[in-house]
Image (tube, rainbow, N blue to C red; front, side, top):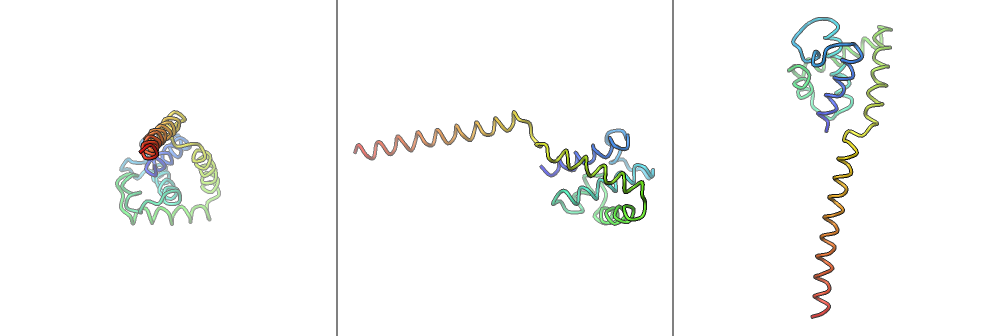
Length: 137
């Protein structure tokens, strides 16, 4: 589930900056992509329990030191750059709104619950049958 969170963060940031899908994972040093990637790394660290190394590998094949540097850079830019801070706050709102939505569809939830109820029902019927046999013997 957390891997989907990283992908969702990436998609939200790419959409916010009007970047093509998957551009955060490109091996480029263009400033707009680098800052978007750094922001994705910082949010991924805050919103998941993934290691720095795993986050780096999911976001462009970077190492743990790059993710740590990105998180520090984002914190510094939030403190010193008004436009970056506004972008950061807006993206944070969008991520929070998305994470409050279910990460799985209603159909998947319904299917899972139905399956669990049916399994319990089958076990109940089996136990009930065993108990009746015990009482009758």
